[in-house]
Image (cartoon, rainbow, N blue to C red; front, side, top):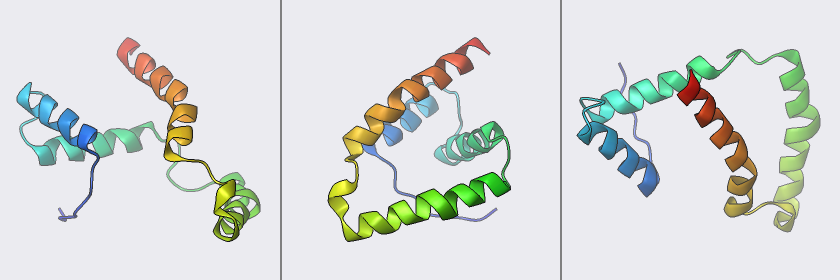
Length: 98
């Protein structure tokens, strides 16, 4: 096993502390390791597909380069969160049902 340093939001740290206090995990290391493993278990394919690589080359990278030259074209953190919140809630409901 390797040791790494990560920076977490206050709410992520609070959530981790809560699940440890509730006895769901024995330690912070265990909680983080299992959480990361769960994220990767949800990923259908860890090796990028040709379609994904094409998307990166044709859409994502040019968009990123455009943002470097004109940062006003970007989204705020709040805008990104609000766009992803419905999907996150949907995934959370699906996990509770399963």
